[in-house]
Length: 257
Ligand SMILES: [Mn+2]
Image 1 (cartoon, rainbow, N blue to C red):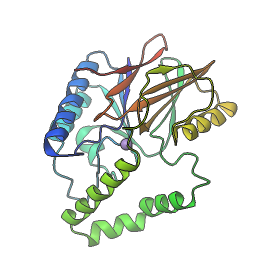
Image 2: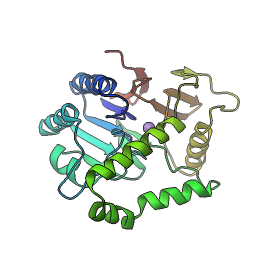
Image 3: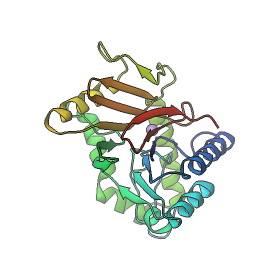
Image 4: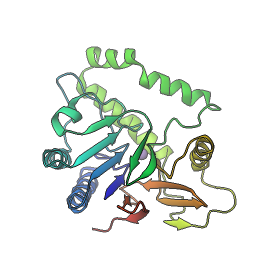
């Protein structure tokens, strides 16, 4: 089995709710690792992550410990960076044994071509401000300046402030939650349309069986003939995950622990 989850946003909110989400995530890891060939973490696993050469953010001990344990046991854990954890260095690979990707990937799993991406930065040609912001955040210079010129406490303080704002902007509270839905007609949710449009365009020139995205924070299984897009939910509100079985079938599920 292959499993996919995204937008855990570890560390978001007050201490109590952050801990509750972390426990739920660890319980999920325990459950799926029983038969997992690989576990894909499709971005925004941390609400904010920024590491220095010798300093990493406090917290997430249960989650990091479990991930390390799984990879020690030989379970493959694949980590995609999201817009909240883009500043990942080598710590998660070296300490927790995860494979790290910072860009979308197409992988062959259970005989199927699976396009996996967090879902930020897609289809932003018409949004110059977002493009500029991304360039700023991705810039090596800024990373360098932060890690050499900004005290870690200050960098993390800024990060949590930025994360909170960004999460609110992408908040899914007002959106319809549907695990499956007939996919005729226009897509109404702001932003999702563009992910589906992106996937649709990509599928015209590439053979892809499944697209798996996070980022939008609500679970959704979008099917249209052979075109199949799975949106993973945010774990604070809609803990969901997708599984791909040996027969090559992809299912989106809610996690109720
Ligand atoms: Mn997110």
